[in-house]
Image 1 (tube, rainbow, N blue to C red):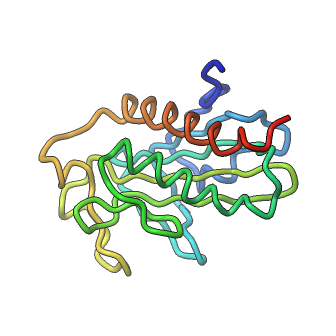
Image 2: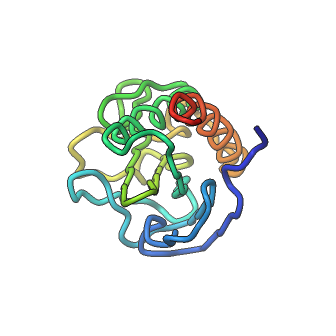
Image 3: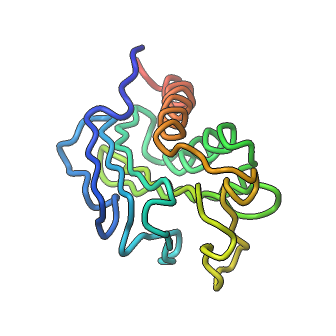
Length: 175
């Protein structure tokens, strides 16, 4: 299979949430990336806070062949892909941790025939730019590695690993 995750791609400087920018008719693999979300969302109605230009914030359209009752597995499929790329570990149901702190979150939202998969990764935040009032201690790739990271290169790597993991998972149900 060719690379389809990330096509078509829409990039915005700011939006409420990338989850809201993918429409009913977008094809599988359609991607929306934002430099900043003003109303980023997390699981259980929580908010996802970011610093403009420091995070990787994106939503990806999926149209699984798998039966809808198993779509919740996509949190772990996506979390595992993100964890492999950043060198962290997935913690069910939807978090990725690095050195015991949360570095990324996964938010799949399913409706009939599609899943919009939202992913947020703390990339280039300094220690004092990370949110203070969180249930799980946050971190960023920069804090953990001591260097800044190219967000575009990271996105490319994440999309490739997400596509591989998704195809492996969903391939069991394709005819």
